[in-house]
Length: 306
Image (cartoon, rainbow, N blue to C red; front, side):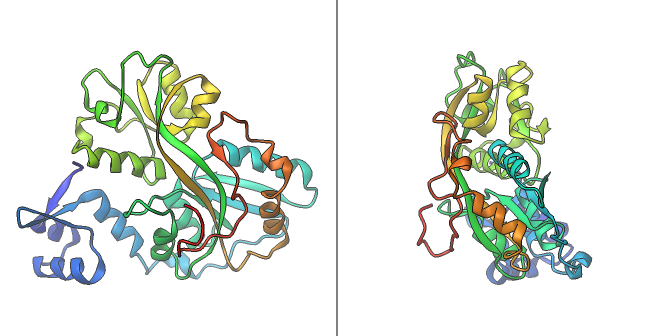
């Protein structure tokens, strides 16, 4: 499993007494699990919990980023999103879209701090049944508009022919396997941690766990070059680089839109393009993308297909 803390160590980590830890578990949702009658706390989830409950942020009173001729998108890296931004910029004469590759969590932070208009995110919720809504509720003062960009296949990227005979994430613990990882705060990094926890593997057992890169394509290039044997990434990158791929899940990749700017012309033009045939033509049959609900508004009530 990932690094775990005891009640005593988490109390020291948070600089509170142990009795307060129990209150935070029952009243504030501090992530914890009970094993043989004792509370244990996954360190990476405690750190996420602290981030999500940070409310005294000096940037929260900042004015919303201006949207006169520019659309600022920040968050999770995706090749299709990059191509869509290029398409938008090629057909628009009065608006320009720009992207900041920050990872899903930092994209939400940027939206909260009003440093962008749209946050791109694919954060799988703890129940494993939905994406992004819980994170947005915890991170932002009010729910943003949530629009689907695409659904995509996420899995294990492997060297062509899979010479190390890797079958699942559990093989990452083998001594002859070196992986490439994504940066902390990315949805892909959180997915790997979730998979390692499922198999009871500590990150310290994994060669290359701290070798992190900023994008899916960079992860693929590490594998293509032979500097890594495997890593978590999307099928689109495997298709582009001729890598093998083992599917883990089909995830939903959404755009969280600031309600203050939702009806601004540039943002509406960008979102409207997701319904057009020229956008759908960017997707090839083998890319691992599904754009059947792209551009649809989503709600955290199960009314939309996950």
